[in-house]
Image 1 (tube, rainbow, N blue to C red):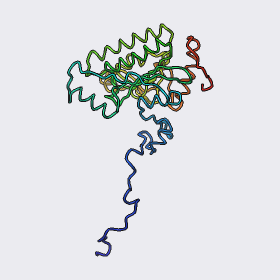
Image 2 (cartoon, rainbow, N blue to C red):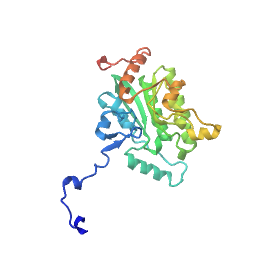
Image 3 (cartoon, rainbow, N blue to C red):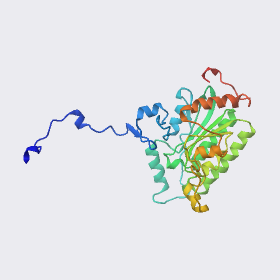
Length: 294
């Protein structure tokens, strides 16, 4: 019976030795199961071409997608969080911050940039969920506030891209104060008739939703984004009944009038340019020098 047993190593080929795909080169869509090469996914703005599922994007990826020629100037990268409460849960807050910095290459969960979109100068801020869930602490609130202040001072449109689990509990009341701080500055911006466009990606929840994310002149969201204050499970336990289908999804909120539109990311830049065309001229804001790009 030994005739069918392999006693020596068979012929090896390069394919046999490397029968696995390189790690990180492929992504599987969690909705339809389609296998995508990372390069093809990037070419589609990280949207599944088969089912339209929107993969997460970083703050810098949003800036590269939306600003003209992917060019922009970053600001306030030196700002870092302190530990005013000496907070410790499973690990010290300072350790969490340091780990997030190493994993993301960012100093904080928010980035601020200026550049042009369709020729219009824009002040923008974007949250990054990779950094402690995009949570809003004192530094995130300050970065968003400076983006608002720049829009107010220079009379240029404001764009904020939200992606957050809410206020950062490690900073206690200081994180909650950022809600009032950003909302007050947005009131000044509104009085100055400077347009503010808010884009909510998945997820946008907690204190971020309850402050600047929902205060836009135009409130937009990406398809399928979870948007709300408390999570669905908490709400279900509180009211003691099942929630409507699709509750707190971007599409549900649009249907019930909480947001203005749901925009596919692949069309987002064109959509924003159209909005800027509509919003800037009536407000008396500077028009782009070359309108051919719009």
